[in-house]
Amino acid sequence: MRELLLDAEQIHTRQHLHDAFAGLLSLGESYGRNLDALYDELTVCPRTRLTLRHAESFIANLGNYGELVLRVLADAAVENPDFVLEIS
Image 1 (spheres, helix red, strand yellow):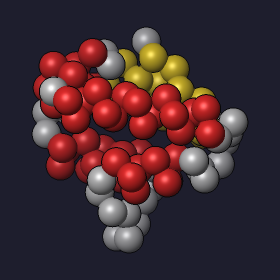
Image 2: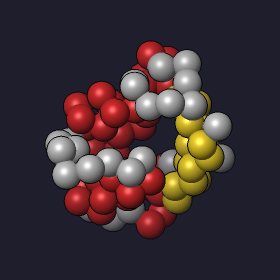
Image 3: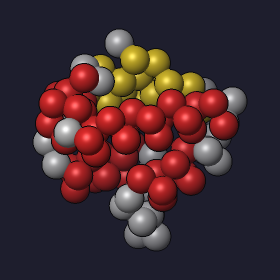
Image 4: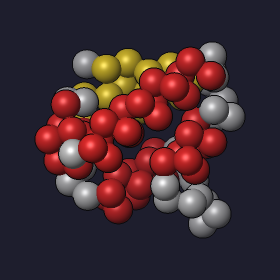
C-alpha cells in the first residue's frame, strides 16, 4: 500500500493545495486542479493510505474551500475501498 502524508498546516492557497496533491499522487499535466478532478483521481487510485495532519487547518487557511476539500477526501474514501483516509 502506498503511504502518503499531508500536513494541512502547510497549505495556504488553493494552488498550493492542488500542487501538493499533484505531487503526492504523481498526477500529470492532465490533472484539472479542482475538487472534481481530485475526487476523480482519488476514486480510482490504487491501494493508498493518506494520513492528513492538522485537518482543521484546511478550514482555517482556505475557509469554505477547505471544508469542501475535507468532504471530497471523505467521500472518495467511501467510494474507493483502496483509498484510506486517516486524520491525525
